[in-house]
Image (cartoon, rainbow, N blue to C red; front, side, top):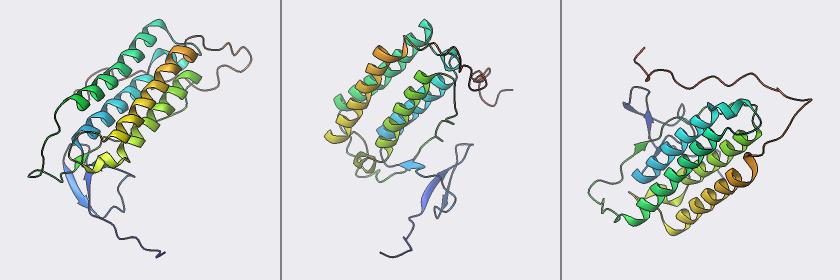
Length: 193
């Protein structure tokens, strides 16, 4: 097998929303998809991860009631988006594809005190990464049956974790706290301060 793999020019997404072309040398692992629905789901999952990492429950070993409601609502939003993608007609994008859709930078995953939040974020990262590396990412929109099934399984596993594991938490009398407090989420909209 050759040492050199030719690089496809890829779309690199800049913070200001503009795009640039590069040879991939300075680009992140996967910075784009060809599928508008995969982009939407990946963005939603990243947002969920950010919210989980900045929740009150990130700093403790149980989930607050408000965070349980919030996490279930976020997971339901992913489930509803998946159902909408499956129900909506697949668009004929032959005149508009292939088109590269930039993916937002992955959520900065740092260590938090909560075992439940760490596990939740780990599951969400796998959910997102399996989507952006899927076969569906090369089609204009929609999810093929296999990728849709993988997403369903990831959602079910995440829901079971929320239902069965995180609420009771654990009482770490001797070892807590292990890490510094997680910072709060954004106080003002980005770029307005």
